[in-house]
Amino acid sequence: MKQLYTWCAIAVIVFASTSGDVLLARAMKQVGDVGELWQKHGLFAVVARMLGNPFFLSGILAMTLAFYSLLFGLSWGDVSLIAPASASLTFVANAIAAKLFLHEKVDHRRWLAALCVAGGVMLLAA
Amino acid sequence: MTFRKYLVLACVTLCASIGDSLLAHGMKQVGNVSLNHLGTVILAVTNPSVAFGILLLLGFFASYTTALSWADLTYVLPATSLGYVLLTLIARFYLHENVTLTRWLGVLLISAGVGFVTQGPERTHHSLNPEIDSQPEAATSNIRR
Image (cartoon, rainbow over all chains, first blue to last red; front, side, top):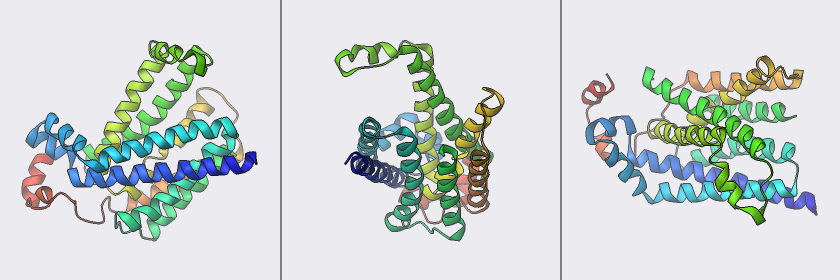
C-alpha cells in the first residue's frame, strides 16, 4: 500500500511539474524575448506583462503543487526513489507535452537528448 | 545563439545547483522543522546559507523564464541539466566523496544529452507575441548588440 502511495505521489509530481513547465513556457512565448522587451519598454513593463499573463500564474500554481506533492511524497517513500524517478520522468513527459501543447518540433536529436538526460539522472541516483 | 543567451543558460544551471546546495547546507544547520513549530521556518531565512540559497533560486527563476522567452522548452531543460554534472564534480573534487562508476556513466549520459540538444536550433517555431514577430530582423539585431 505504501508503495502505491509513493508511485501516486511520483505521478502527481511529474504531472504538476510538467504542467508548470509547459504553462510557463507558453506564457513566456506570449510575453516575447525578455531581453528585447526590457531594452525597449523597461523592467517594470516586462514584469507587468509576465504577471498579467494567466498562463504564467497557472504555471506558478502548478509548480507550487509539484513542490508540495514532493514534500508529501517524501514523507511516504524514500528520497532515493522519488527524487530521481520524478526528475527523469519529468524530462520525458516534458518532451511529449511540448510536442503536443506547445507544437515544438521535437526531432530525433531532442528525443535522444531527453532520454539521455533522464537515464543519466536515474544513474546518478543509483 | 548569442553570448548573452549562453550566459543566461549558464545562470540557470549555476543558480539552480548552487542554490539547492546552499539551501540543503543551511537547513542542516537549522535542524529539523516540525509542523508544530512553523516559526522555525521563518527563522531559517536569517541563516546566511538559506538566505543566499533563496536569492540564487530567485536568480534561477528569473533566468529560466528569460530562457523560455526565446528558446523551446525541449531545448532549455536538457541544455541546463549540466547542473547534475556540476554537483557530481563538486562532490568528487571538492568534497572528496566517492563517485561510483554508475554515477560517472550518468554524468556521461547527461553530457551527451546536452551535446545533442545544443547542436540544434534553440527555437523551432515563431514567438506567440505578434509584436515581436512583426519586427524586422535588422531592428532586433541592433538591440542584441
